[in-house]
Length: 92
Image 1 (cartoon, rainbow, N blue to C red):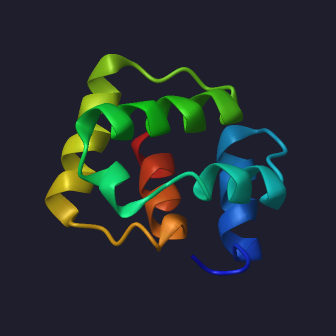
Image 2: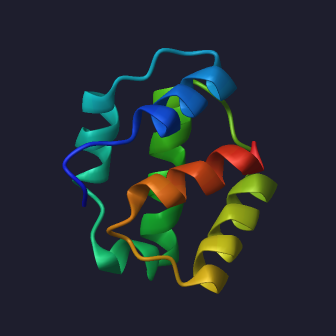
């Protein structure tokens, strides 16, 4: 994982959510993600719910399933958390 999250990505997240999510909060959550997290649907669902809680934005089960399917289909690199977060924000 990169040592920092780009200011553009963090600004986009904060603008989209209307919240002030800090880089530290994102890093703390990102540090819990392992390559296996994106391969395990239960862990992936937990991660999505954690991001939802951090942003204080409810996410429906349907949206969670769409995000799970998109991540699995894309084969995203778990070390690129910024891409994952951007994709999740587009789903909102």
